[in-house]
Image (cartoon, rainbow, N blue to C red; front, side, top):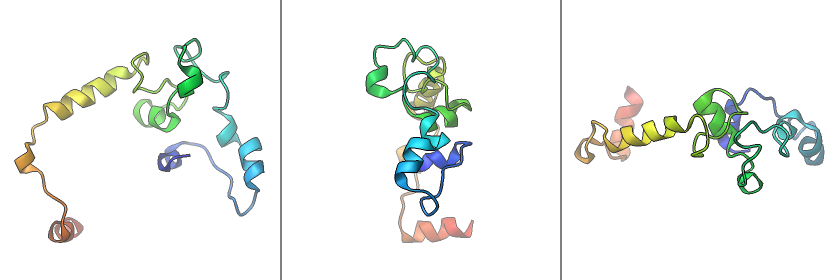
Length: 114
């Protein structure tokens, strides 16, 4: 899984205690969202499900609070409005390019002090 998977309320087995094969085939974390049976609508009947597998579970969890929800990035998701609102906010944000703090050694040290 991606680095955001640690946010999911799922325990992944430790590779020091189990084989990769065991983890892949038998662990809850990898089997919960395998296949199509777990998918809610609109994913379950979507003609894209064999390509996108319902989207990103981590992203769905982070943006909707439930990993089983349709990925909000998908225009068919009931939560797609969150993506549109965030994009609109980014497009019309209060900060201009001249107000952004560029990353450099001096700026990093200032941030560290805060």
